[in-house]
Image (cartoon, rainbow, N blue to C red; front, top):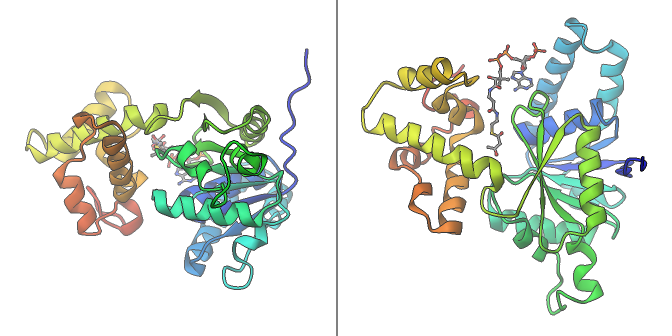
Amino acid sequence: MAAPIAHGVRTVGVLGAGQMGLGIAYVSALRARVPVLLLDRSKDQVANSLRFMDKLLAKDISKGKIHDIEAKEARDRITVLDYDTQGIKGFRDVDMVIEAASENVQLKRSLFKSLSEAVNPDCIMASNTSSISITKIAAATIPEGVAASSEQGRKFAERVVGLHFFNPVPVMKLVELIAALQTSQPTLERARAYAVACGKEVTVSQDVPGFVSNAVLMPFINEAIMTLEKGVATKEDIDKTLKLGMGHPMGPLQLADFIGLDTCLAIQQTLYQGTGDSKYRPSVLLERMVDAKWLGKKSGKGFYDYD
Ligand code: CAA
């Protein structure tokens, strides 16, 4: 039998310390046992995330899932980069960067352009995007005036890949792996090996809007929101129907709160714009809730209220 492909990641960079970035840093440090450099422009976000990580580690120790030495080693593997003095340049020596910023195509393209100028040419640049084209993100790494087919044009683009984790990352067992048109086979194999080292199972999706997961999940969530909008049932009964009737771990409205209503809306807009298919059109209620900054669990209010 052939030996498994090594991910070759001696240090990983995680760009974005929100709920996804924190989870990716957590499984990288605890499961893959790789040193992590964490970068976010918000110091408060980083501080909150690290507090939450300490809570998770303490809970795992108290449940006997990990030894306290393991937890300490994992925590010690995480270094926070200073946004003002180091910024993206702080990733210059890492072997892989996993980007987990907001679901915004312009933001991601600009981050990948900066990354390609900062990292070494062997570094894999992965995006945790839930729906945006990996091919479009990879194209942002090609310098102005350089042909995409040239060696320089391919140098960074072939190392861009989609690694889509699920929330909560420490619990959900899946990573979706997405190749851009430009992604090289060694990049794909190393990215897959890294996800496996993080304790995940891997499925492969083509680079279509929403990939497999959100092309299926978002119409389901949107249909639940429109069912509420039409007054067919209360939010509690809609969620209870899917939870108890179909065995889902949480109902679709609670799940939308949990993902973040702004993220759900951004994914639905990408699906709708990318396909032109009206089944992906976001509901008016979802748009209004995001307008009101009712973003779900993270903002304390969504379909439900949170402490
Ligand atoms: N971070 C880390 N661990 C968490 C957590 C979090 N935010 N929330 C819960 N957990 C852990 C708990 O600590 C607990 O761990 P132990 O088994 O060690 O005790 C375990 O998860 C179960 O938690 P609870 O008993 O408190 O609650 P539960 O049984 O209701 O499970 C849940 C919580 C795992 C979140 C479950 O409700 C669930 O699976 N929900 C569906 C989640 C889902 O569908 N996620 C995918 C969203 S889509 C996405 O992320 C991608 C995208 O592109 C939009």
